Image 1 (cartoon, rainbow over the protein chains, first blue to last red):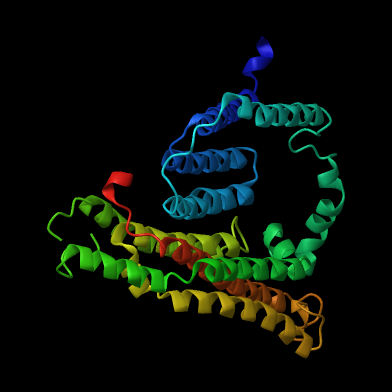
Image 2 (cartoon, rainbow over the protein chains, first blue to last red):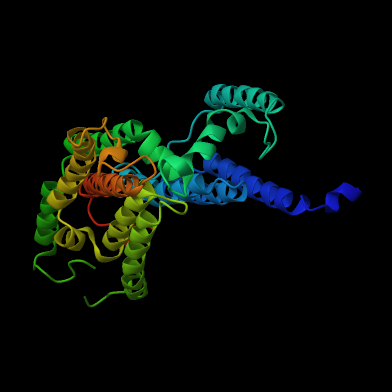
Length: 206
Length: 150
């Protein structure tokens, strides 16, 4: 009982609390039928997991999760949701069995795999002894950039980053080509709204 | 605007959008020394545009940031990145070898700093433009969010 009150107890409690919130939110998402609530809760899920990444010292990952997961994809999912119905169809109880079994089997496998994982921040972990250690030793003399993440991203792995940038660009291009650039459909929407309302500018933008 | 019951939302959005944009640029130019970088900064900039469209309506946002500008920005970002790679080749180095930019000895880091900043600027433009384009494509298809939907 005494080990509970060591210096590690605080971070451990924070981890447990954040992961418990994630668990509750995930259960709520699985049980809800209203798509709007599901989109909002997935934003909450991203935000909490971003906080958890910060708690385990993965600041860059947490930042990306907060910006992309909680900010961007919530807005995009909201836009996509508005194109469909507002509620999901209820499923038959028997149909839920398959996904439940798959999720359960995956969870068992993941928990089994965590037994072999090295501890958090373990200096002997493979991630900290191989290429990671080399980057930390060589980075300052090669580039003079304090943030190793940036120098690996832009200098050592510059070609990869170029590919990622092209991927982002192509993703935007593909969505725009599939759905249209938004201008024409917006103009149409405005025209029909104006026609329906009878007289023009009143209330536009409200 | 007679029945504007979103006035608090609008005022707060008006206060926050410039702060979000400044924060995005801070994250971008501070990416060398702190957490974050161009990818995150690009998304933050796009989120500022999305917040504007959520509070002021999509038509006003499209007037402020035209869709043509957004998709051109994305293309320019990719061109900056690839152009930087070819510039280093022209300067006598390998593709994206920033060390060759100013023909400096191995101890000097000016080429690295300049190269990283310019390349990240390309990433910033590409990500912000592409995200805004995606949002416009999705949001342009639906009418304004009606009050019953909330």
